[in-house]
Length: 388
Image (tube, rainbow, N blue to C red; front, side):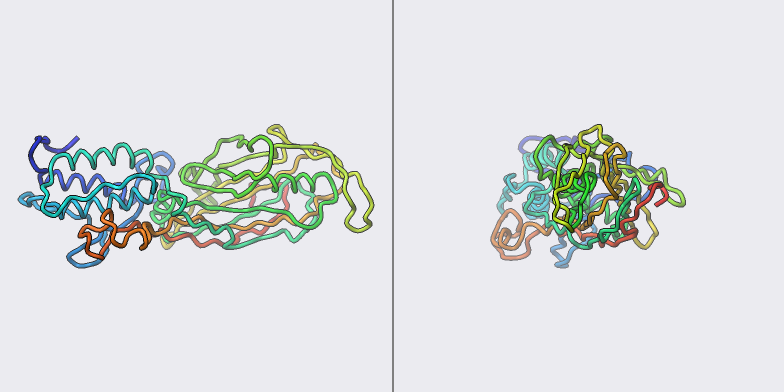
């Protein structure tokens, strides 16, 4: 509700304009937070893209949102500055949403402008604030890679840990709030002379690209059959339990899936060329052959790190004619929210230019910096995955 009554036929007041800016700033920029126990429970943290306001007077971007004195008469110039910022945010969410048309320079700013903007805040931004138009997301799943180099795997678990580093906790929040994702891709190559090895081949063929976003984890699933089902639900960045922090911090398991198929098969021995019985490989939600993801966070003060632990758990009930002897390969990267609208969509476009048809400036949603990725623990066979 407005801080003061809206009167039909009257212009909006300075106080009402300031309120419109403040309400939008909660999405456009957002407040600052620290990494603490409230991380998974304080929903307001999922609001805020970390954007800056364009300061027309000084021709620069600033973290200071525009506010006016109580005596200021609100003109089309004020409201158009706000509308172009709102349009840039809405365009980032979904380019199919029609942007709000700017006011003519000589047009009065009536109460309808207030209610139209409030409608956008309440019915678009509130529910879609974490969304991103697919065209605004750049996927690079191969920032780093890792492999077990085909070392035979006889333990129950094979574990790998990667570290995603952001400049700060707020930078991580802004990345995920803007629709950013941590992405990873898994495959196998060379080897596979028994049922368990073939089971993992089939599993990774069906897995597809794995994506971790603000509130969920998913896989593209490029195989046939039923979708892979996570036994613990699909959790994301905001499910990391900061309250479990200690030394070392405890991981939060966020994803646990099994192969959707099982079977038995024969194959060709890679050395002799002979047909061999490769045994059986388990599948389905009751299989203990599982792919697990667990995450933890760490704020050092100089940066914020998300540790992503991948655990491959073998099914001991499978008939195995030998150790798992295939190459397990993985690449890790990010899907990064890009600057939008791009220049070809903005130049001469009145939706993003407060002084249209003047060629510049136009307001945009600025790209969120992607994290850097590093290998912390290369694939390690173990019977005690919690120790890694």
